[in-house]
Length: 134
Length: 291
Image (cartoon, rainbow over all chains, first blue to last red; front, top):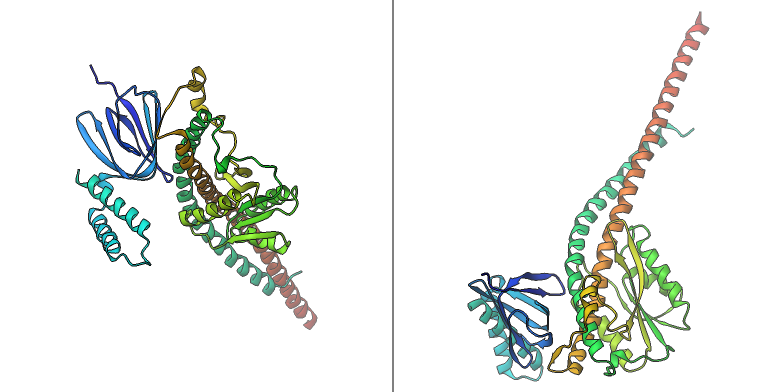
């Protein structure tokens, strides 16, 4: 018997990133990772920057998510993210460069450096790196 | 009758114009295709944000948020979005007309003009423009969107504006753009705005949602996102509409030029023939007079 699947949609303001049936999803929730199997109870949660993992048949893949929301209802998981990138679309060397730049800026600790921005940039770069490596 | 030289010159002139309109049509067609793809790709997100917001909203009746506060509309602002450039038929004019109609219903409403055409129009008529954004690029610009959103929602939260409206043209298809006036703030009709496909399953039972972390903070994140996305979406709709309006306008202009060239060529040939006939007559007449 085939395994029961759920629909996973990942949408960003620009376009639909993904729309397919999957077995299992883990999203980076605001208060820790959330895993969904089919027929999960209805839920809405905000997301933080992190890696979304999904399992489909026997394959797993990763997608970098930068902020947004997840909604679960019925057997449908909808992720609304400001930015979402599939692992194979991520330019690893660019992410690494960005990581270095952000780290440098944080180390300088000069007053003109926007700490929040640098930290966000660093987080993004790290997430991208992680997603790409998995 | 116009002289041969005049006719030739006019035909040349129209041919030059035709070259321009033809080229503009081709360019607009290409840009339209891209803009159309963009707008269609962006719609699912807008619809879903609306859906989630509706469901969170209906679960959070009574929850207060600055962007939800309804006040007596004493001071209102309009965000009027048009293109930067003309030569696109009635596209900008339609939006502006719709906007002016709406603005006139209020006493001294403030205007936030996005796009050169709306700025020029309202400035000439001495409307109260508080912000203007011109030189909008080819693709919808997130930075610009954020600026507009920030300005509008700050003013709204500070209770300087009681209502903020958004005027733009919805892209229906390549031939139809529908000017719209939408209330942007306060965010209204939470819970009633579900997209049609979802309505039916919704009817069955109100599902109880689990909220993480909690309804208030969800709302606090969702609302700005929703407002921002509304403007972003309006940008995309406008862009697609502008390009398709321009393409249609240029197509018509090219066809008109073709027709004019045809008519003028006919007149030219007639005039030429008449001239030749006259000349022959003169020669024949001259020869006859010699005998």
